[in-house]
Image 1: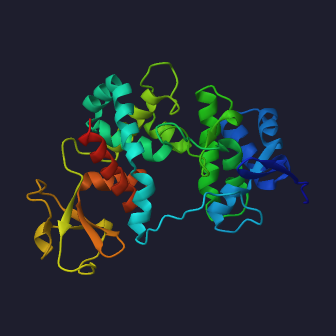
Image 2: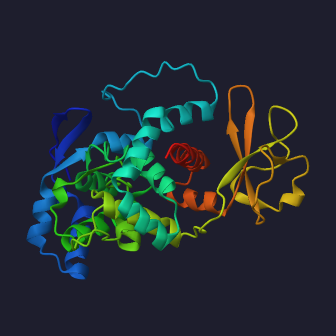
Length: 330
């Protein structure tokens, strides 16, 4: 079936108006929402009839190149190691200062959250800083339109985005907001902590007691992130990571990564770089690619917990290093 698509230009993105009530898979999805969750078909048809198809998120998910991509900022910083490039944009002096100010501004919330969940304030603040720059950049893509695009336009993660779209529509009903009015990331993540819709149900906390869970509100975001980490195994009072020394400039002796654990006694020739490290459980070896050498770290269970938030060792290490720098000056 042919569907009329009209191009609409928006600043910083490429979108096209599309009527998904004429898309067979979307129609099947609407019928499911009606049958299983009792949504009126008239309401669903209104939502899906005027969707702005999100070409930029679709290109990012599928890896294809846009014919007319939006303008991007030129990266001319001379960094040659993968970690050097990554951390340069994640752990900055400005973000460290903002993190300290954020903790100070919401110190009462942080105090109560830390006591309840056992997650230090600086780690929660570091996640918010990296995810949304403390609320300054929660995303520029309309969440409903983005999830609809990614749910029904061909890509390998269609099933995942259909589930997230289902959860988002349910969330909008339960939390009483218009699903068309929420902006988020190119994958549909929302708020200061950039939660996917399914995570609201699993980990969201109404900490400010206004009757709604909203990660747009700092109090709810702080508590929800702490709850996420706690439920994924955060251990109160334990270490996260420490840098270690080894022979040479490039490390190939043992396999590295957050999903492989070792007893420290197995790791011959490796020792903490800055004296004794008071952690007796198994460790992971995390390797950071620098321009002229590999930086090597022991990572504890709490480091692994951070990777449950984002499955990247570089992400978890940037959270750890930002948290340490925030704490140092607070």
